[in-house]
Amino acid sequence: MKRRKFLKAVLAIFGLTSLVSFAYPLLRFLAPPSGEARIKKLVIEKVEVPIGGSKNIVFNDMPAIVINTPERGLIAFSRVCTHLGCLIEYEKDKHQLLCPCHAGTYDLEGNVVSGPPPKPLPRLPLKVEGENIVIG
Amino acid sequence: MARRLKDWLEVRIGLDDLIRTQLTEYRVPNTINLLSTLGFVVLAGYIIQVVSGIFLLIYYVPHPEHAFRSVQSIMSSVPYGWLFRQIHVVGSNLLIAALILHMLTVFLMGNYKRPREMTWISGAVLLLLALVFGLSGYLLPWSQLSYWATTVATSFPTAFPFFGDFVTKVLRGGENVSGITLGRFFALHIAILPPIFLSLMVFHIFLVRRIGISATPFGVEDEEKRPLAQYIKKTYPDGNPFYPYFFQKEMLMVMVYCTVMFFIITFMPTLFLPEAANTPADPFKTPAHIGPEWYFLAQYQMLRLIPNKFLGISLQIILVGLFLSWPFLDTYKEKNLRKRPVLRGIFLLLLAIWVVLMFWGR
Image (cartoon, rainbow over all chains, first blue to last red; front, side, top):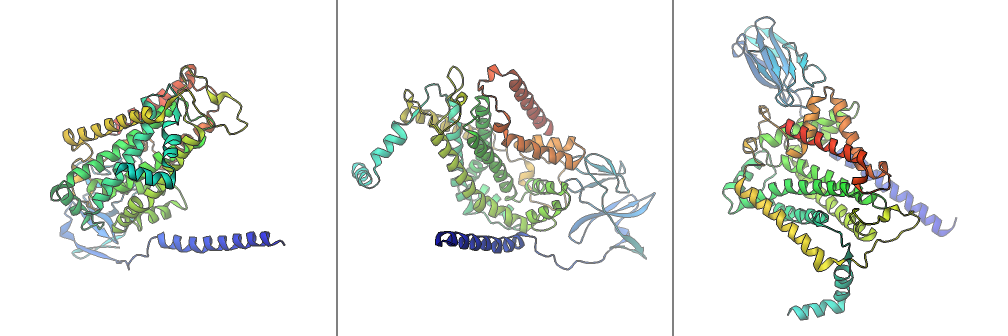
């Protein structure tokens, strides 16, 4: 192998190695740092959510809502719209959840009624323990 | 003193020769008009953004707990802070408007045709970068408007399976828009985008000078119709000198640009700063009325109308792809739009759709 060809090959190998060894740390650097330990359960008092009312909560850094419907009782959802991440609001009069960004609506089961959301709202596990509501 | 400085430079860099070859003997076509000055206006607009942005950096604090207050302080406490922020805010909108107008005029005059494909692509990428500039800068005041506009924009990749969620997390630096997102967008806005934008602009200007400025297609024989077998720089020996003839036109348009900017700052100061822009970000409350800047309104409305998120965002990506590759799609040699009724019809239809969607999106 001639000296010039050899130098070209060495340059290519070193260049590629440098690029790859830089690309991996860069990707790791930009990837989200691992989150803190998450709470497993959130407890609120039953009186905070009267029948027909709702309460906005934060569960594991995620905005969520607990609704006390006369028909279905207590129910909890993520408030993050499955379309583009805006926060839904409970419309008590219309018995629905509305996203203000693109007017997506959900029923009180979290199912999409109208608008662009591609999937239902994630439902959070909930149970009543005495005078408390335990989410998670 | 000036004479001595000129002589000092002359013997070192050949200043006279530089001025002669690049300014006074560099000739532009006689048919060139004010519309051809828009590229220079964009350059001037970018310089205004850089200077005003550097001034804002002196007082801005890129932290979720301080960002909003620091911006409010710039507006109300720092002497003339309001002026530099308004120049930056209004200037960003005008810069994008000038870029869109520049692209439109280039399109209407068919100046994207060979051998200027790369000039078109670099210009189109500059427009896209300017939009990213606008988006990244939008978050920095940490207002309700900026927070939720960024939440929506960074949710776009989630439309794509497999990698979409990861891309969104990388953009946000986590699940939600947070202080980490602010840090990322700040770095993007002030350190990553400016050198990229500047380099691309230099490349764009290099192409314009290297290939030769394009004449308007009306009443002039198009050089694009000749067979493209070798590089030939388009020159205009009978044209007007760039300096002072065309340069004065360009400066006139820069003055018009600044006049519009100061008119808006003086008489319509809230045009680009609605109420939600003056409310601190609340990650737990999406405002009832929220919308992006005017240049994203059409895309925003399109997403509202298309029920499938994947389809809506894919369609927008396809449209961007068509926009970038347009010189390779329209290979018809005729530049004059008056002789191309189909293209004229498509252009007017697309423009009408864009305008309707934009106003509808409000």
